[in-house]
Length: 174
Ligand SMILES: Cc1cc2nc3c(=O)[nH]c(=O)nc-3n(C[C@H](O)[C@H](O)[C@H](O)COP(=O)(O)O)c2cc1C
View: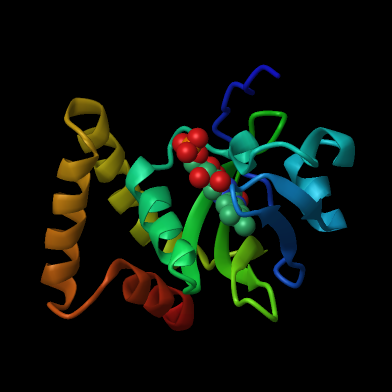
């Protein structure tokens, strides 16, 4: 499937509704709720069985997904602010909580769930500026450099802050 060409137009989300998806342990979509499907612009058939990067927006820095995967593969939750790409090229920002799904007997992770809601405008402004910088560094250099920049940025906000805490605070604060 050809990737949509991004356009600079946001989709307005209903602040009361969640966009939910579930994947296997490799990030292949196994379930998406009606609102997720509607906003993505794809049909259910187009989404199920596809890697979740089907809605990846090219404005998202790679380091954000790397840190997200590291955390959820360790069995921890992760909150992230993500800019997604709809089929028609428009974008939508979402506060996303990622959770591992475990086998009750073995405790083994067999997949993940993600719950998304519309973020406050102020949170988007903070994160958009940071992501633009990280993306630029990744284009001009590499992901290690964007991680270095992110760590320095976080240290300046609060020396004990990890990326996950920073995002959680943004979520709580706004
Ligand atoms: C449960 C779950 C939900 C995900 N939701 C999104 C999402 O909404 N948008 C997105 O770009 N990536 C999402 N991802 C991450 C993608 O799997 C992928 O790592 C990311 O799009 C980066 O793609 P790339 O590795 O091809 O660059 C999700 C992963 C999981 C496990």
